[in-house]
Length: 251
Image (cartoon, rainbow, N blue to C red; front, side, top):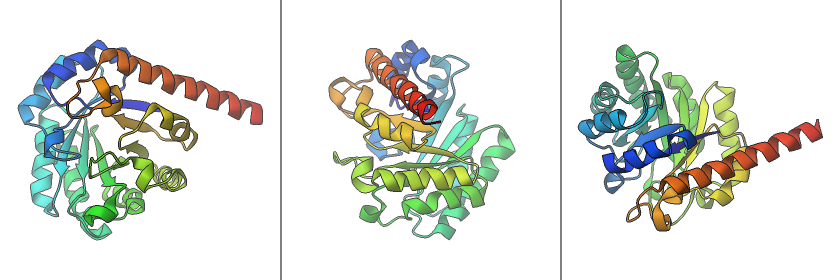
């Protein structure tokens, strides 16, 4: 399981760089513009320069409307600015067909410029609260559009969490659908250390966190702390070892 950390500024990205050995992907977003709020192109560039060259940088392009052309341009801006994972929050898409329209445009825009870049179709565990596409439709949308990964986050950051809206058995179904289509499965949404055993068991490929590695556990007022990143990674590794040992014993 890969650890994705989301700084919201260059200063926080420097803190991530100090903990680079403990994380796998640095994710650029702007939380005050939404769950998957897009940051500025120059911030993506500066963060790309601030973290080690071998560490992938992802960037969100926003909680997007159903406007494939607009979103494709935003995605191209992110990849030109240095991101190699491009995440699109399908906030304004109410049907799978709308999601596919947007994601096909994004995939073409991104991969025409950088074929090796990874495109992530992101949906929301609390889709019922905002009226967007069903979470379990995301793997099919991603597969049919040529994207590389399907992701779930939470749209409304009010203290509710991923498992409050999509319980572990449904998350497991999401992961299984993604893997059946050859996609990576990413999960986020106020994930805590206590969730890691479940996330490991269901086969999650990427776990995204922010609040869990911020001082005071506060994704908005707190700042990412390198020692909290290290502690989160240590807990991830512990669960991975225990799960692997359990599988070996069961075999």
